[in-house]
Length: 164
Ligand code: FES
Ligand code: FES
Image (tube, helix red, strand yellow):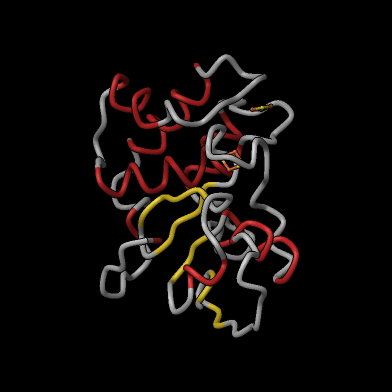
């Protein structure tokens, strides 16, 4: 698979979950595990351009796929506009949910570059945050969306679709 533009080849147990693979095998611990059963959204990553919950996928299901994790958003020391907006709007407190929100928002803004507040709220409705009350997160996503061209500049090229 390719993760954040880098190729990896590993032999893994068939039962290993993708989130555990990213964290344990590749040391990409920015992808967080909260509920581990598809409810909280903390483990959200992009797989072939689509937001998915890496706690619900087996690592082997990502064989040959192109993945983007939160570590792949920044360009060197330059934060992605979404990350900057989260920082400026104080859209995190403990930060545990933040990688999932960022990846969900990233995928959403690629499809909906000029969203309404209602669309943003709908888009993040599958991500849980116990700290912020959501308002600063919504404001941060709207702020990032107001920077034309910035979001799509970091899009992931998508190989032929695979149904998982
Ligand atoms: S850890 Fe995957 S959805 Fe909660
Ligand atoms: S910032 Fe703490 S759970 Fe969201």
